[in-house]
Amino acid sequence: MPYRRPNIRFARMPWAKGMNAIVPLGSTNAWTCVLLSGLANILLLGCSRVVVHPIPERYPAEIAIQKVRELGDRNGDGKLDLKEAQTFPSLVATFKRIDSNGDRLISSEELQQRFAAYESMPQLIGTSVEVYFKGRRVAGATVTFTPEPFMGDDLQAYVGKTNTRGVVPGFERAEQPTGGLPLGFYSVRFESPSANLNVVRGCEIANDAGQVGIIVFVL
Image 1 (cartoon, rainbow, N blue to C red):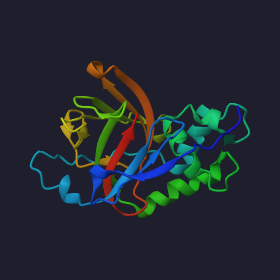
Image 2: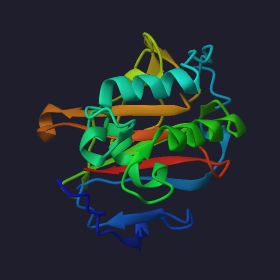
Image 3: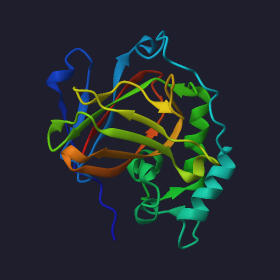
């Protein structure tokens, strides 16, 4: 199946006035994950409920890349095309960014470059999530960030629930609030029986610009 780049248009969101929010419209993937910059760490820190757990130990880059190849590289050429990347929702979501040379393949070298970028980033990023489904904010939805299998052994999921504004202000791990989400690649499940919503998307938690923000999912 040939790789086709999504046809994406950009528009400023009126509800995000003052936050410099740019949201892609018309994605062929029918969803969007975008960071709204300019929020301070104080949004998630300084709260007496927050328990800062030790950051889970993820695989070194070399082992993570080996796991990606073992689980996703079906033809054994050492690279992942878009079809093979579908093994990992997060790699589908970030395919274009990781494919730095534009050859429509993700190579071990490109994955190594991506993991190397983590070295200059904070290991825990304060993150909120905003969820839209069928053009509306979704209240009461459970949002679960599960680390991809190549991130590490027995890494626990991070779970949150949207409030009346469709926003997950924070996440819990092992039923304890956390101060953010660790760097890495995640499969993200959205569940809401009342909205007839049960879908999985992918997302990378990273902070290339050195800022915290809100991740907006348009499902």
